[in-house]
Length: 278
Image (cartoon, rainbow, N blue to C red):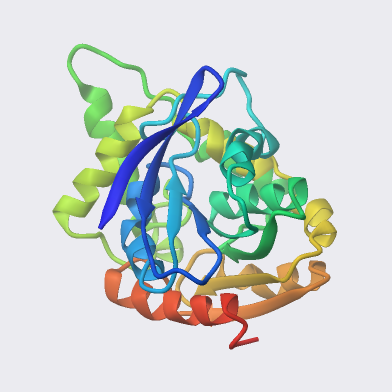
């Protein structure tokens, strides 16, 4: 069972999804992607919880967590907000981050090397200067709240289109994705999570696009797994990321977009966390 609670960080609060798992393994902190919240990875949390305890925060300004106080937060700012979670643990933890969450996991590991045992970077993006500038300009739309509710429909279509195209705003055959639109309830729940933080969720995207991954990845000293599903938009970055890691391993999976694929992929990742796979 996944339970929900809040963790106080000064005057702010971080919303958590927590799953108790078998004892004997390090606790896993799982960090969701940009847009939405930890709800988007509930099936991943549940799969990991078959072998270990899991904590999954909503990143600040996403889901039910309090926004960060600065106007343009960096990935380091998001990581700093989660450091109390790690500091509260008596033993070292493992980290799992998905997309933008992988950047946050990386910075957590760099900030607390003695408290982090292993790190999994799932579907980390690695963009060149031109791609970064384009993403910063076009990827995060500005939603103006109005009394006719048009922002509700706009949010629905943007979230839906992220499943259909990469990037979502290039809507032609060359940029079509093969994952398909999720079933309606799942899509509805994702949109609701975005709507909760409509005016701040884009900050995480922008922070992730600006994050200097080529400079930060070589600093990771703990064992690090770089992974992605074969159909993921960031799969083609695996080899380049692995070359930047001093202690990195590479794993291709079936991805985590569906519960069935996620269960298989998490089992392979969990085996690496346990040291039974390289």
